[in-house]
Amino acid sequence: MKKLGTYSLISSLILISSSLIFSNAHAIDGVVCQEHTLSIYQTLPAGNTQCRRVLPATLERSYTLCVPSKLTIDPEPVPLLLAFHGGGDNANATAFQNRTQWEVSGLKNEFIVAYPNGCGTDTLEPGKARALICNSGGYNKSWNTQGSIPRGVPELCGIDDRNFVAQVILDIQNQYPIKPDRIFAVGHSKGAMMAYSLACDLSSNFAAIGVTAATLTDATCLPQKPVSIFHVHNLQDPVVPFEGGGIDSDFSWPSAREGLHFWADKNGCALTIAQENPSAPLCTKASCPTGVLLEVCLIDVSGDTSSGDVAAAHRYDTYDQAFSAFNYNKKKNVYKNIRDAFAERYLE
Image (tube, rainbow, N blue to C red):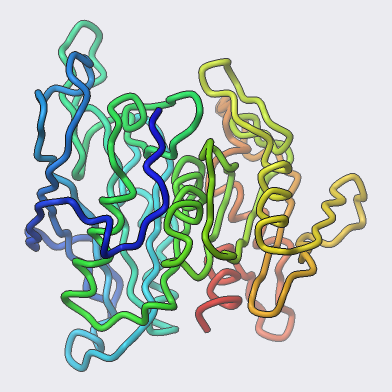
């Protein structure tokens, strides 16, 4: 797969786009959530059965934007967090939003949250021609993380997700004042791999990323500057094992340990991961230069396998519940989940 290269938000935009708000989406009290569409001009490979359009193509892409109500009335410069859903036969921004509710933290700490939609197909029925779908709905939705082996529809179709993300950021900046040095990316599974890939290709635009159940897949990662990383991994995860591999050969992943040591080297950090020690703390911070954080949190749980779910240990809820169990605050009588832990480090 051809490497897109490292580029800035401004110079990379070779897209023709328009943005509209076309529906209301899930929200909590005090937050306004709306879905936005972008028409993006992109070249797609001809002849691929999962890429219905001939060259060139205009893709309809979407994201859900959640803004504290206060900022819709009295805008002021605030941070922006982009949250990327994982892959799966029906993964989309709304489903991930309902699980994570980053807008809860956005309301508390005054930042804006965007949930982009990946690309997938409109049907899973055998023998039926599949059409590419890149807005809400669809199946097998995922991200192009530029792996050496294409995995999933966006990589097979050569979807330019980096330009899509750049366009999303600019679209939001046209609506609200965003602090340019306070943009973050978080995600789970393939969505977290997307966050890693953005740190590779758009490092100058992201202050930090939050990663769960993922590894670095970008085959030629070339960050221009250090990016802080908060990585949570379940040692019993069979889908994206910490030491590499996976459930089947089609989705065998590089070692997360090796990816973290790669980032430690790029960030100028000294990292020791000691998961063999059962008395070790949940999270280990690398020794990094001032202003850079590289933190690895390891849990060790099987998840709820009572229904025969072989991927239970990989689910976001499994990660979040196990992480929370290790982060009980006696004084406040609350369990800090992954979302709140990331916000505490970067957004409070």
